[in-house]
Every structure is written in C-alpha cells, then in structure tokens.
Length: 491
Ligand SMILES: *[C@@H]1O[C@H](CO)[C@@H](O)[C@H](O)[C@H]1NC(C)=O
Ligand SMILES: *[C@@H]1O[C@H](CO)[C@@H](O)[C@H](O)[C@H]1NC(C)=O
Ligand SMILES: *[C@@H]1O[C@H](CO)[C@@H](O)[C@H](O)[C@H]1NC(C)=O
Figure (cartoon, protein in one colour):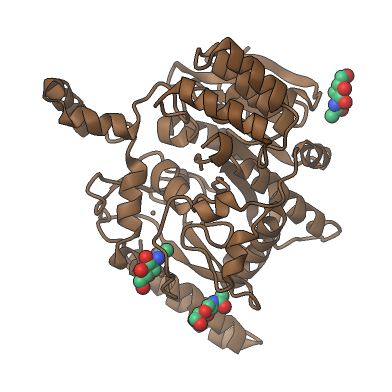
C-alpha cells in the first residue's frame, strides 16, 4: 500500500431478444446501404462477437446489453486492452437525451477496473461471498450512462502484452497513449458511440491517468469541427493530484485522525514532502514503515470499517456468534451492506474459466492468474510526474467540466491531501463551501470553484461508490447534468 509498496487503488456487469433483432437489422442495413460494405460489416460482426450473452451466476431479467473483449493497441508488441461496456439500463432511465459514454479507470498503478470499478463500485452487479453468483447493484452508474470499464495498462486484469518486458516498463505516458489508441480503435468497433458526449472518470492513481488521457483527447481534438471523441470533461475521486501537497495533506490526516505519533509525523514531513511519490528515498521509506507499524492492522482505505482479516477472525470467535447472526440478518435486508472481503470474491469469480469464456477474456491463455492488482506493474512503474496541476490548469482554461470528489474516511489519498492540492490552483470560488444533501441527509460537502467542482462524500472510504453507493450515484447524476450538488434548500 503506502511506503515501499504503495498502491493508490482502489485503491483502485443482457441481452433482450429485441436488441438482437435490432442488431440484425443494423447488419442488413449496413449490407444494403454501405458504400464500403465489407469493412463496416466486419465492424458490426466484431461488435456482435463481443456481446455478453449471460454471465455465470447473473440475475435474470436484465434490461441492458453488455459487451466485452479485446482491442489491440500495439500490433508490433502484441498489446491488447480488455474492456467491458455496460450500456444504459433504459428500463430504469427516464432520460430523453442521448445517454453519454463514460470511461472508468481504476489506479494502482496496476489495479483492474473490472475488479474494482465494475465488480465493487459502479457496475451493475456485485459478487456474493460464494465467488460464483452475482446480485444487482441498485446504484449502478448505467442507470444514467453507458459505462466503459478499461483494464489499463497492458498486464493489468485481463489486459495483456505478448512482449513480457512491457510489464516491467509501464509508466504514465505509455498508459495514456495506449488508452487513447484504445478509444480510437474501440470506436471503430462501436461506431454508434462516435460523436457521443464523452466523459473520463476514475479514482486513486487514475488521478494521473484521467487528466493525462483527457489532455491527449483535448489536444488531438483541437481544430476538429465534429470530433469522434466528443470529450466534455472528467471526474476523479480520491485522486493522486500533486505529490507535494498530497503528502503534506496525507501526513496531516494521519496525525489528526490519531493514527501516528508526533515523532513520525515530523519525520514524514522532513523526509518525504519533496519526494516523487512513486520513487521515495530510503529515509522516506523508513518513515513510512514506522507509520505503517503505528497505524496497525486497519483498513487504510477506509479507516472506520473492519478489515477482511478482522471479519475472518470474528467468524472463528464463538462469542461473537450472536452479533454475527444479527449482522447476517441485516445483510439480507440491506442488499448493499458493506463487505470488506469483496476483493476476495472477485478473485474467485474472475478466475473461473466459465466466467472468462462468457467475458471473451483471456483468449490467449496467459500464464498467470487473474488478480485485482498486478504487483509486477506496481513495482516497476516508470514515469510518474510530480504534479497533475499543470494539466488541470490547461483543461480548466479550455472550459472542460472538471469534478474532484473525495471519500473522507480514506487515509491513502485523504480529503486533506486533495484539498491542499486543489488549493494550490488558486481558483476563485463561485459557490462557497456548503453541505450537500441526499434524501434529506447530509451526504457531504461541496465547493464550486471557477472551473472545478469539489465534492466530499461523508463516511466514504477510498472507493466512494463501494461505501456510499447511493450518494455516489447522486453525485454522478449532478456531474452529468452539470448542476451543483443538491442543497437541502436554496442558499
Ligand atoms: C498475442 O499472441 C497470441 C498467440 O500468438 C495471438 O493469438 C494474439 O493475437 C497476440 N495478441 C496481439 C494483441 O497481437
Ligand atoms: C488464463 O487462462 C489460463 C488457462 O488457459 C489460466 O491458467 C490463467 O490463470 C488465466 N489467466 C488470467 C489472467 O485470466
Ligand atoms: C498560487 O498562489 C501562490 C501564492 O500566491 C503562488 O505561490 C503559486 O504559484 C500560485 N499557484 C498557481 C498555480 O498559480
């Protein structure tokens, strides 16, 4: 996690027969009217091949389509990125406007957007503790958008490279370029999404991926009248933004929450503040090690909830049996009761051969198992600029929509880190700090700057939609509608 092996992640989900009929019609129309019938027919057939018929253990009567598969991003090296598209649940949607396309990226670096984003945050399904069956996430972001999950870079999740050395040479720049190539090639397979309103979202170390990819899209769209990638803006959560301010804010959070000693607080500030977070010095690493020992076996990504280990040891404790039964019955009532072991269920589920087959994943039979995060990628990360603030400035000046949110019980990329980083932009305020409401209760706090909206989510950990799914969906809707977070009453 932090220290020598920091992981900023997540540190970092059917078809109806009507759709099949529609798709067949599209194919026939393409055959009849297309001027270059051979290439566009192939395109549509590739898309049809990627359609997920049904996932093992999936609930029935699902009102949306899903597609997944590979897009080659580098022919020579044999790099292919895995995507999972979850289309709008039109049975649940009242929107009359064309629903946008939203890309979601998890961080790490090295963590899977399928394992985190799709399976435990904003996807349509979550995985039961049996690792075999799925249940519906009522707050899935495909209630309002078409959501595209991408395992990035190659070597993460189901994304792979035929050039093994690629796994040891990943960095920000190639990750962004590959993701951009992915988008262009993906749109050739899904031409119905060309020119569609497009947003890039993600969390944690995707605090680097999201602005960097946004910058490439923005710059390459310049001067184009009606760009294929109709990029509108980005949103990041518990995001790595600026190493210096993130460090200062993180150490302050640890000390203020009573997680570390005065001496360690001081040492961290002396030895780490000016370091590049991906490549800290020995002195800084030492301070991190001590901080980790002082913090103890807590879940740093959500400091007030039990760790997965803690849940396991509780299970062995007979005296807690009554409490456990109470919790279990609560679990049956609340479909989205927090489960600290959800990563374990993903690891079982996504390694099932029948799941991989249904997802059109691992078609080349890579030699290593599926993991939520790849240690090889994390441990061999190369270029990682100290600050994303210059990109923020460029994209704010370009008038793009930029939202930054933060779950305030995360100690890995805490709310204080984000606030110091955003303060460094010196933006003027349009709407001053206020509590925002969800179903009559404070959901968190928000401030609208000239060019950027900040949203804190009360009681949420590093993976905001995992801990506060309803509030996260409210926030996502506000972002798409380009409206401030809801007030209880007009201020
Ligand atoms: C990787 O190699 C396998 C086996 O040779 C091949 O089937 C696959 O198409 C290659 N992938 C890419 C992206 O070139
Ligand atoms: C890919 O499939 C092979 C078997 O063909 C399996 O051993 C391996 O664990 C799988 N890896 C991933 C990343 O899915
Ligand atoms: C913000 O203001 C501070 C203090 O005036 C200044 O040092 C800093 O360079 C400014 N930052 C930006 C991004 O303009």
